[in-house]
Length: 231
Image (cartoon, rainbow, N blue to C red):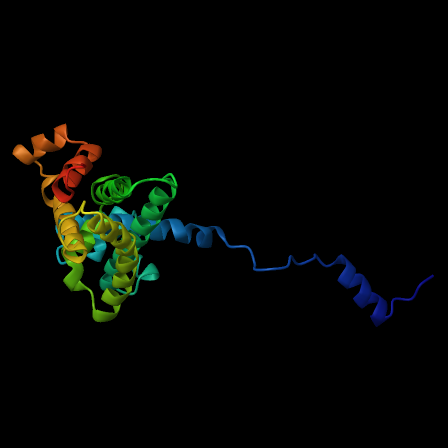
């Protein structure tokens, strides 16, 4: 016969208590859904900011687009301005990832023209392809950011454009690109970015042009404008 002393009771209690798993506690269902809800907010806000403008879009509009109550966006973002900055950061991060992936698929011996083709084609996809509302919002609503927000977006923008610099400089050095590489880069981005204005036009000649031109065809046309014909 054993006597239940405080020591034996404590030992038995410890043995019977459920073991705690190490590491971070498991997320609740609501916490696991936070990432999806945030993404829905960003996607809905990007679409509305592009279609209606930042000033013309209310947080109620954004909440409705995401299937939320009117005050729910503030659980994820402290203000509409913070949401706008997040849309632009999301757009630039996605563009940078897609560009890096496109360049990684190039053959090691790919020529300069092919590298520029990949960069231009990817940029058209970022501007005009699926899920392409983010970067146009940045082009339209840049002045709505404060200085700190612009600095954060600019850092990613500089990383994105950095991949173009050595390609354009090498094309210039081999006389395939006539203009100064710095000015050429600014002009190229200006021309490509302007396509968001006319490629998606709802009516008129540009809309008919869109029906005929694929993104590959746009890329070919752009390269014919920027580069000298191969010797």
